[in-house]
Amino acid sequence: MTNKVASIAAVIPAAGRGRRMQSATPKQFLVVHGKTLLQHSVDAVLRDPRVEHVFIASDEQNEQAVAKSLPNISFVAGGVTRAESVLSGVLHAITQGYTHVVVHDAARPGLPAAVLSAVIDAALSGDNGAIVAMPVRDSLKRSEPDSDMISTSVSREHLWQAQTPQVFTAALLADAISEMGVEHPQLTDEASAMAYLGYHPRLVMGSLKNIKVTHPEDLELVTAILAPPGR
Ligand SMILES: Nc1ccn([C@@H]2O[C@H](COP(=O)(O)OP(=O)(O)OP(=O)(O)O)[C@@H](O)[C@H]2O)c(=O)n1
Ligand SMILES: C[C@](O)(CO)[C@H](O)COP(=O)(O)O
Image 1 (cartoon, rainbow, N blue to C red):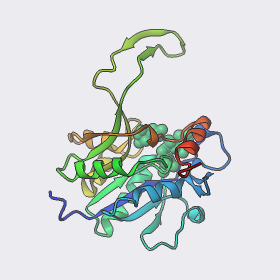
Image 2: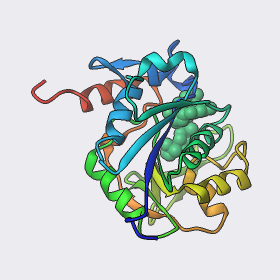
Image 3: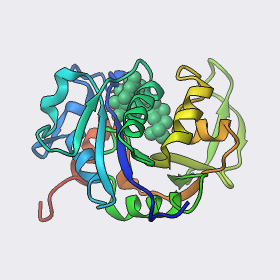
Image 4: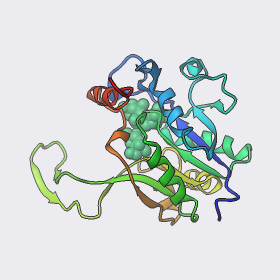
């Protein structure tokens, strides 16, 4: 596969409820510096000119959260699980002739342009695809169920924390998610589905700025990360 024949769409899963955020409004629709987190994420993936279209997997009623009049943005149905939302977007991308998909969480609004560019470059060099990830930097401990005491320490050597974007050949990713099953408990990211089919996605260095808004205190961090220059 060479990148000359690649046509690339982004798929943004944005149908989650944000239970861990404990906010009445799902976190992707919270406004920071005048834009929803979803809009920040859409803008971030469109910073690479190779991304031609964005498919947002979300409910129709949330279309007002993004500048939907843009011709290169479509809304598609979300799913009960994140994987089902991603599959929905990927299948629409395939139908419209895209060969590759850049899957990026709506809840990661701080994606740096250089990270996006690097993961697309890495993914276009073969069928394994590529994901953004960060080496584990803290010491790791394991506890027993229902206990707050350390049972063992775990080596962090060669361990990475997966982020998004995760970039794959669209048809392979659709097969992988379908084979593994959208409700499989271990299907927490696209790389897990590709690994299920025997692929070995490449790891591309991520950024702390690419934090996923998961808990209430994360909102303070992204507010600082997304601050316009000079503020
Ligand atoms: N059925 C779902 C569940 C999640 N997502 C999206 O997947 C991304 C990452 O998921 P996560 O942080 O787990 O979001 P939520 O499921 O909303 O959060 P929680 O697990 O706390 O409820 C988010 O952009 C979220 O909107 C989705 O599109 N469809
Ligand atoms: C895909 C992901 O962002 C990688 O870290 C993450 O797994 C999705 O969020 P969740 O909290 O696991 O649902």
